[in-house]
Length: 145
Image 1: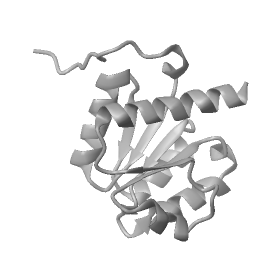
Image 2 (image 1 turned 90 degrees about the vertical axis):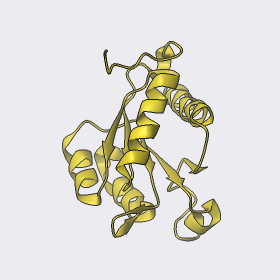
Image 3 (image 1 turned 120 degrees about the vertical axis):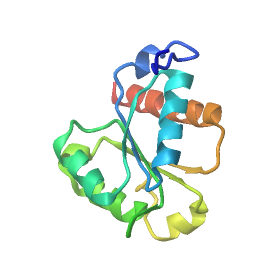
Image 4 (image 1 turned 90 degrees about the horizontal axis):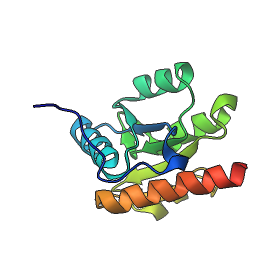
């Protein structure tokens, strides 16, 4: 039996080459989200579970199109990581999305209005998460044309 997952629907053309990074201190949760997104829309995601690995990935890998950031990643917050990302020239175009159980108003209070492209509150159905991510990436692609 193969461990390969088949997307339940074809990957939209505008999403085929998109890069997604999930930064979440909970490996099980991050893996579940990554597998669910692949099954739902065929987009592959890389996972990191601590700040050091996240920074290393973001400094050494091609810039992802979208990063899902859990609020707490070790001793750092998504606001700290997103602020650092915004300061990096090669990550300026990367969409930063807060993906947390933390209420959006609490996160917004510690950041400015432009730090995150969206706030997604956990738990969320994979189908809804997939739709939201698809829309964010498609809108971003259309904006850049």
